[in-house]
Length: 281
Ligand SMILES: [Zn+2]
Image (cartoon, rainbow, N blue to C red; front, top):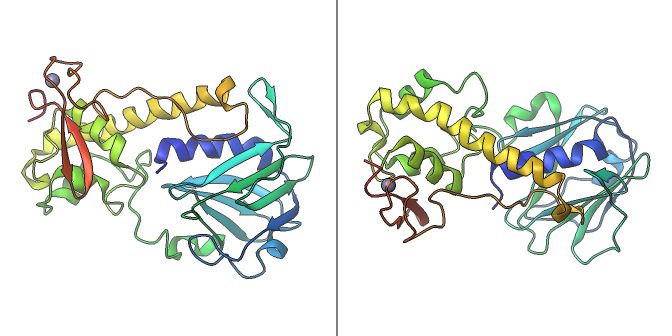
């Protein structure tokens, strides 16, 4: 499942192909992905100019000149490919059409954006841009981790009544947008907080350290994604997946980079958590 940095990397990779360009033709090759695609989707996209490409949580939003926004969610298995443009030092030629190319946008100037999703856990919808906040997939999502609304006072207040483990609470999209399993493990390691600790039993001073650490971990991952966009590994035009080194995530029994104690893996709410039992209290 792509997390916020991967989605941000996809957005940055799509922007040169989409922003400021008209969708000359939209191919919509099936009626549904995870959920039904919107009525008359191809007609509503064709001829529209993409004014801006944004990210909200793990969703990409293409604001159109028609007053609608195209909402894109990659789901578990969705892949975005760009072609007919430069990506880093590479000119990406159009690939042959593939099975599972469900939506293809032919952009003004010859670029092409292809959404391929073998398992169809992804989603797309069209929403009036001025009513976006009420869309059922976006309503109730908490503040963006890089936004001004996400700050120490907010986090202390949001967590003071939460008795669940801090790991579980930080994964709750109502608390903060876009944080997923990988980066929460990394953040809690850097903060020295045991993922099992009840959120409301952590001092305000320790909680306050989470805000800059969340930004630091996400920023590093977004930078790693940015370098992957300039890298030959992405020369096939597939966006969003990149090599990134983790300090604890997926490193069970390997030595903690801080103290050498073997990293421990436990399961919380059905998801693996990785942590150092010596450094994290
Ligand atoms: Zn350690």
